Length: 314
Image 1 (spheres, rainbow, N blue to C red):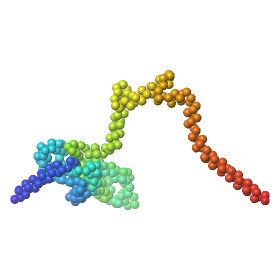
Image 2: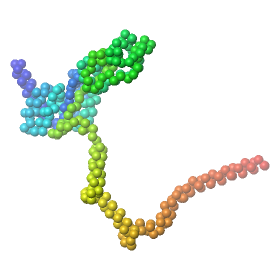
Image 3: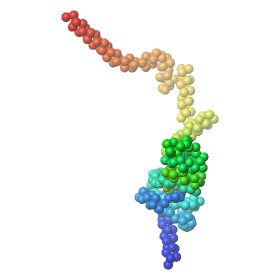
Image 4: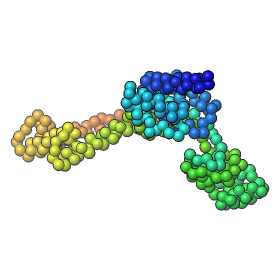
């Protein structure tokens, strides 16, 4: 009976995974190392309504995907990434929003001896709550200290653990004594599956503005290359037209040839003073109002002085 129940459970799991692969066009492949059952429950609750989390044994996930490749050959791209402790987060909405929800669910954790450090760990200089009897821990880690008011003081900032290194027993003990929880654990996104394509999650950091900027840089380079070698392209055509128009204006300026677009230039060359007089005409008009106000103010001051004079000699 137990074997039948287990077989039924496996069959139901295969059906559920294939249904999710058909229903959801997008998914994250996530690593769940150091994620406890309570934290996983909180992540499921946070993603409810926007995404579905499915975990399972790698062999079962591979078997289910291989059995469904006939219906969706693009699923074969997922197989190389199903290794170690991984699972799926299926979604239909915006991948960037779902990723933000996944990464925001992290829990602080202390350093454990033998664990791989996901980040660099630094201990800041300053007075610690530890007494002189704990000096041996600092000496074992070559950390310079002194005794200040009965407590150990760290003299310099210390790079205690490097990323991807194993946490030693002494480092873990020191961090625990200092009550420092340097790590935070949650679902770690490894790959993104999007309508048959599999790519690195860093691709989601590329914004529309960044794409437009890169595209315009390429267009600029094509235009510059085309102009340099004299090979016309769509990117260089506007520049070629402008340069040709400039040449036409130069010819019109030196000869009697004229056309509508060159009339203003010819008029300017014939009488530059007319344009010079028109340009600053607005400036005196703008200065007229402040000058008038200043004159009125001086007149009021003179009247005030006259009134003061009559009062004195009456």
